[in-house]
Image (cartoon, rainbow, N blue to C red; front, side, top):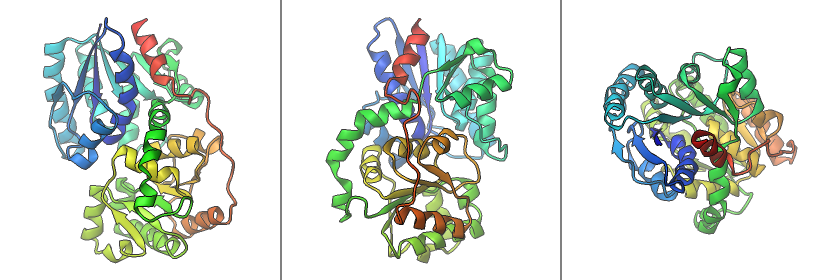
Length: 359
């Protein structure tokens, strides 16, 4: 059986790692790994392969950065060549980036079955490019692997046949649980002079937050205020760094905010695991903080992961500085909800996926 997995951006690597590991134990399966090159610098790509022991990709398409249309087109053009030469039985795609949708389109037109890991997530906001990618991918995929029951309901509501839907759990949590102890041994907080529970962590990268100078300024001003009470560690995404310079907002990320370059997976997990709380617009961090029972302030107006709110430690705070500050004060006062681990977030999602594909 020939399975080709596609990765393109930082979150994809975390999701594919446990699946690649599970497939490696099955001699009857030929697993072919394709990196589209959507994220192409070392801090956003190569270091993750090293941290997570992911095999070196069989091929790197090297598409690089471009507009959505140009990037999607380049991926499709190059990935078609891979499909024609390898003739896989199944294309496995993860998440909701342009690589996910582009490779799904190519495979579908070549009559190759597609398996989508993390299917059925919906923000109900079609201004998000990721939402379009999710809908297109789920419409065309043959195997839809979901992380929670809400995703199952979303797919059924959109008319997806129930036989295609498989609730398997969350592969990101497979990776988190596997590497949690190894990350802790790095003790990144101590190397930064931080006490456990004595700091906050922030990540920020979504265009809706960083491409609008007024929105970005408001968020950074709220973080400046929070940093007067507690250190805020801010690994800055390359896109965000460019916008901060472009908009002249560098003073807002100077001391006492502690900005740094993007961290590898293990380094960031070590840092996040000891944080008092996390501020983010990342989908994956909403899930990871839920399992770690760390308060999460999501700087967005919606989320495709509502289970992290109904069962987890997450709260949507939007982009209003007053709401962000108010939520941070609640955390500092110890006024935060209890978190529980959602169903099937148990470290065995990849095992379930591989069992279904090989069965």
